[in-house]
Length: 362
Ligand SMILES: [Zn+2]
Ligand SMILES: [Zn+2]
Image (cartoon, rainbow, N blue to C red; front, side, top):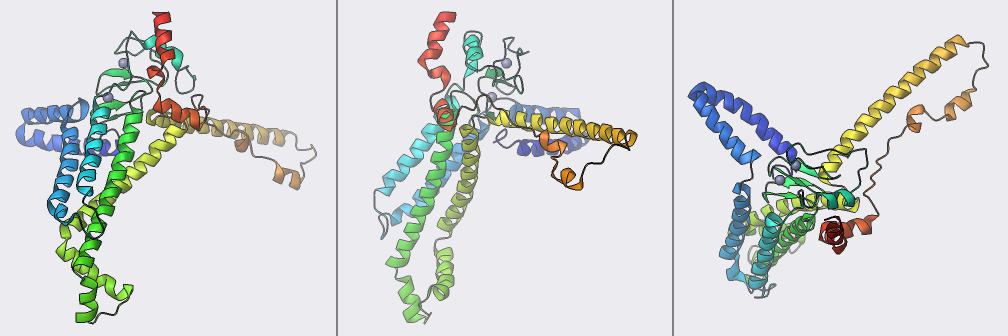
């Protein structure tokens, strides 16, 4: 997920420099040029490599589960229907992946730019009137030129390497559905495997064997270690898959919460970075202003030493200048969480009013 997690691409980029130097030293300029073109193809141009990795992961995991665990379905705690519902769950996941990968993220072109310009006003804080130097069209507020896909995208969120597509105004809804669906599929897999293993314990009467034949005390504390050891020995593939699914579900859950917070406040990933930059700059400006004023005031006090002094208590309760200059994020696109969710599910450019505007201006 190259652009989904920018530090990964930074780490890869930083790692490539010494590697390039090493190859340049060993193979000469031809070798380092070859490495450069591989880097360009993999990281800077649209390519399906990571899409194929996604298909390999989801297909491989499903195949492994079917191969090792379907023979226990139906089991003591799980019905035979899960052979089909699991296939359906994975199928829907792949459909959502294809929908996000191949849908229009909201490409801005000369035909629709006027609609996007009127749909999103400039806030003159993080977006001001500009022209895209590559597309040679005005840049609507909230849009960004994706350097990988080489196009301007409305309400640009980020370029997702897993999808080999930008995530923007029109496909954020599919992207969110993709993440939450895969999170739920992972949870489904964990629960189903746990039920299969619990069923095996019951069917093979492991607890009875341990207590009656091996004399283990019938308490959770005494039984848990030998039961766990038996499961790890007899069903190591299922345990490994469960650990993998727990890790993936934690990552997906965290990622979904982060994007839900952004959707609820009608902010994109791109805008959250812009706000971070703007607010830290604003804070620095305010600090500089406050210290300049403090310096001016102390110089003034020095020159008017005879003036009656401010009481200790008054000085204690006086607000500091820095508090008065608190920086706030004034997001004009945030119209309340219900409206914000509605805007993600029904993007402006898919609505009739957008098309009516188009025919009027066209
Ligand atoms: Zn552009
Ligand atoms: Zn892109």
